[in-house]
Length: 101
Image (cartoon, rainbow, N blue to C red; front, side, top):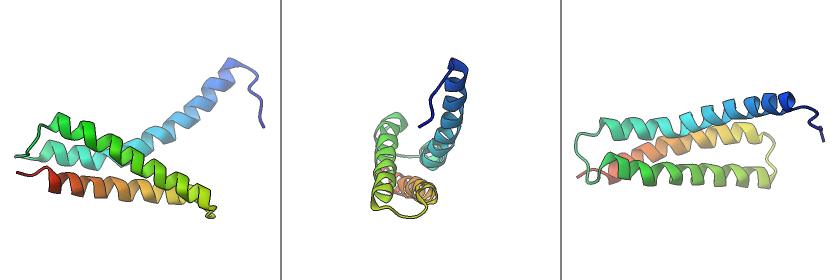
């Protein structure tokens, strides 16, 4: 295991962790945010939809990614990316379907 010697090493490592996390969250949440902002009529306000939809998408994607890693599949990073994309798209479709009047 690598030992962190200085605080600059810590910040460099956190930078390389934060960038992929931001990209994955953007890929996960962008379709749902786009659908919610483009809806003309919905049963509920956009803020309420986003408060419930975004954490649920994150929970589903994280759970599936951990299950892939636990199962020991050969390329967990590719599976995590695929799970993120599919969960984002399905979340947008379901949000559009269930929030219509």
